[in-house]
Image (cartoon, rainbow, N blue to C red; front, side):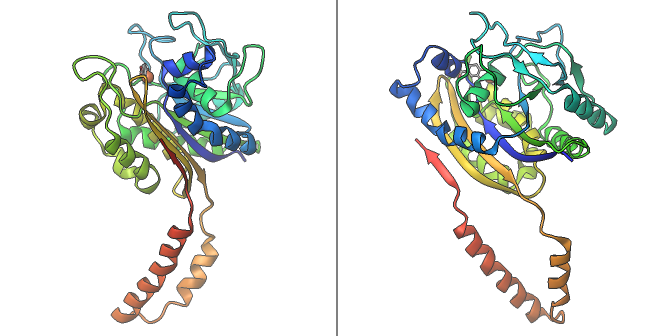
Length: 330
Ligand code: DHB
Ligand code: FE
């Protein structure tokens, strides 16, 4: 059975791609950004997933106002880098995983999430920049470390999908992956954001408090995040802050038990607040363990219930203190 083992959240910014392509990553402005991804590259190399699903948005490269799919799943064998105005980025062609992609399409559509299936698609910085940040710089004659299934989400033209729809789609993707018979270890990326606005009177808007709260709730309370209306993203996180709904697809695909293992936040890269998080999925506690502790429960007097909740709270606090999230901020 295939399994989603981790989720990665990462901003994309075209200028990050340009810094990589033009060998400017050691310049102080860019080093501040790239240094936050050193541990992520180590993590990715160590984790060695068999497949990555990358939720991203196309910026009028593969699609245009002629064609605006809300959710477009790439089922092709390969996805060439798109020409975004200055030639295609010098990165390898992305290899797909048509078998798993077709399985996800079938499972998710029959689960009542209507996807557009793309058997031919070019991919832009929305996907290749987060890939570089987490998988490293790759020249066109090299290979990316694993096949990728792109999932393009419309967050460019109104109306984008709601956060709730995104969280639910993530859950459907989890069900789809878990019903695939081959033992594949799958990592899912949510990309875009965090707060930014690239045009108009509020160009340059960044809201670090909002971003931090979003990152905190991604592990703690994704359901709360899924209730945020579009207008709040626009007002608080800028016109392009709406890209953050894509992170909820990733989060929904991870299930209830996750552990944040890494976080990085820096401001700015170009116009954008760069946010990054890695969450690993954890197995649910075994039902038999829950049953045996229930058997030991004392008679349900009020005092007994209070005493039990206090006793329970202690180890939970201790566990929280012991849990060391690796965080880097600049
Ligand atoms: C920028 C950020 C984006 O997400 C994007 O798609 C284009 C530009 C920026 O910060 O410049
Ligand atoms: Fe963008």
